[in-house]
Image (cartoon, rainbow, N blue to C red; front, side, top):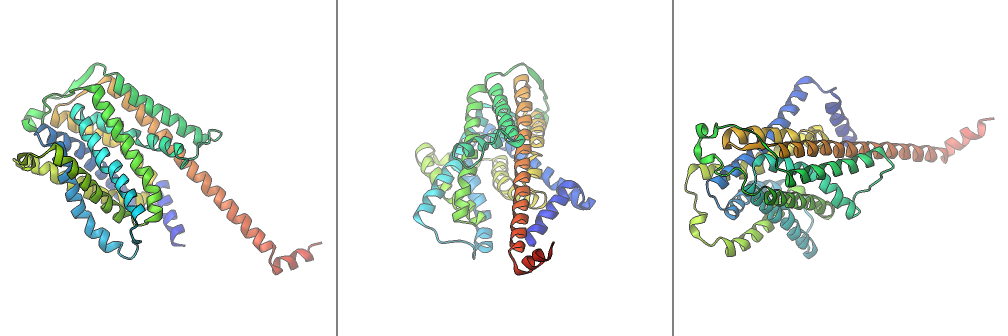
Length: 376
């Protein structure tokens, strides 16, 4: 009954029958979430512009996130955590490799070569790439005979096509706001785009690693149904991997020192806001409005990043990037619509099968047989 009531509440929010203050609260929550994540793109690029080491930035960010998350994971899931086994530890290692080391490493490398706007735009391909990986691993069904199946396939093709356009076609510059010097020269990008194609390839690697992390989470959560603890253990293994890399690539002690308040701000924002506040807001928004409602606002993040990057960093927008970003957003909505229709169809089939079983069970009962025998 509680699960049914939760679904009813989510449906009421999405269909608009929820009270106006609740709808406004949910809408503001989603917009604040996208604003926090948009700020992370810009703040991370500002950190790179100030000369912070990529590996140092990642280690500090994940250390803060772990310190913030670990107490909640320990207290809230103390009774739900199953014992750890060697096979689970191996799975956590690969989760960290995909979700922390490769994901964040490729992102920072891509952001070094490209602007935050296109980093955010390319990340909209994650649902489509996740669908492809899940289909290859037989975790997702591809039914092109249904409208939702065709929508997911079309959305995937369009999203990947948009990412390909961004990667191969730069185009002409559209605008360049010179306000970054008024807001602080240290944040401005000295070279807006160092290498367009290399940056796009690294960001696509970030998307594949992110998608692989989400696909690998599904079997792990079945064996270890404690989401916060899974995140905390993933961070632990990720930090071990990052520190091992840092031992070879970043052994200069000066690189580990923060030399300005701006550097400290970027690291605190990445750890506290992007990994703390944003994660909490995302959980709250998904709980109140559902995963689909939260996901459809993701392109708003790209618009926010474009505005922030132009104003704060002085980044340029190019025609190829705009065309590709529009195609990626269109593909994103096709995939999301297909997933929603597939879920609705499976729920309807489940309800029909439950009704059939209920009628068959009633028909086999003594009361039903006596009633049937009385019918002429």
